[in-house]
Image (cartoon, rainbow, N blue to C red; front, side, top):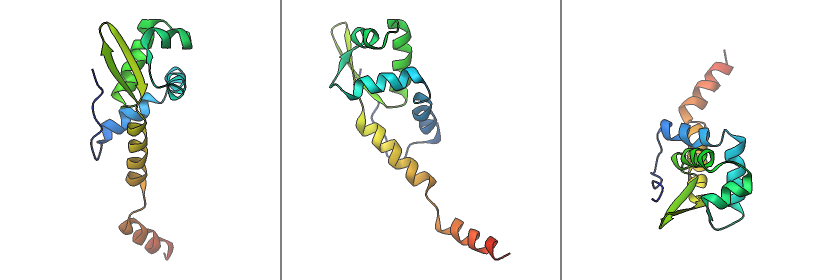
Length: 114
């Protein structure tokens, strides 16, 4: 039950899923808890942030789709951990996506002369 590995040039849909996963206070609280520990079970995480297990599972699904967390199963217990590599990779790719392009700079220069 591993999360999908991050591909090299994520599509715009993958960017949307990643940043949409960050657009919730509950999911940010989940990431905050995961940042301080190697891994945690779903029930322990539900207790730590004070939400029901079904509601937490829905939020964790969003975080998995956004490649922000990893999951692995041991018997009937699912353990989650923060996917730091996925988080860092998306942020690097976003920087590349929005970086000024030489052609755009040339156009900006032309427009400023008008």
